[in-house]
Structures are given as C-alpha cells and as structure tokens.
Length: 187
Image 1: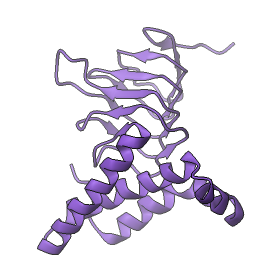
Image 2: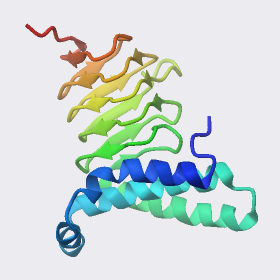
Image 3: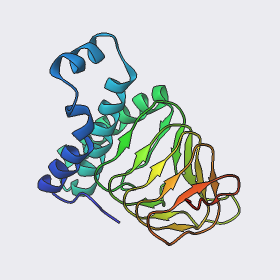
C-alpha cells in the first residue's frame, strides 16, 4: 500500500508531522540544534522517513532511486542512534514521537493519522503468525506500551504506559491498560 504518491501529499504529511516541532519558538529550535537535543534528531528522523516514503513510492527515475538509497541510509543510521525501526508506509500523516528509545514497527502494520508514540513501543506480529495490527486514527501509545498480533483498534484509542494489547478493540475513544490490555471504564 502506497501512502504518499505525489509532492502535494508529501508536503501535507510533513506539515502535519512537523506541527508540534513548529510550535517551538525559533530560539527553542535553535537551542535544540545547538545542544543536540533528542527532539531535534527525532524531527529529523520523521522528515527522513517521509522523504524515504516519497522517493520510494514515486521512484520512476534512476536519479530518484539513487536519492532514495541515500535518504534510506541516512534514516537508518539516525534510527539506529535513536533506537527507531520504523518502515515506510505504516503511518498516516501527523506522526508524533515524543521520546527517543526503542520504537519497533512491523512493516505490515497499518496505523492511521495523528499517532503519538512515547517511546519503548512495539507494534508488530506475535512471532507465531504474520498477522499485524491495523489501527485507526488518533492512537496515543504510552511509554513502554505494545500492540502485538492481528488486532484491530478503533479511532482515538489511548494505550496506557506498559500495556500490552493482544486482542482487538474496535470501539472508538477507549483507554486500554494492563497486561493483557483491557478497557478502562471511567466512572
């Protein structure tokens, strides 16, 4: 499945992905760059991820294919330093990563728009089958949370810190906590 198929979509994805980082003042962004703050490198990684997707999905010319390989090498190198393994074409626009540290995503997982990752996350298969998560828009994945196996999650799902989701929750606007994850009922 190709997600970014033209330059307009590429710009839209970047604009939505970078909204949080652009809310920082110019001075704060400069300080992040100057002191080598992880936030600077996370934003750079997300930009490289989207450029990788754009070049891969539209790579009709040899020049673009070569450019794609160079961007892919940069993305993978930075990902290794940050602890990220995020393949192309998994996330819709509006991806926000708050912290560096282990984030692993299976290449067959599908996650909608406006996803927030807090670090220490895994979205993948269970190791026994090839089934991978299909997740709606507005996922908020707490620190250390995992989504494992052929599960489906609705829109605006919040997965609490260190929760492990192993079954589907198709309802929208639910909060999942615990191991294995269960729906938290608000009183």
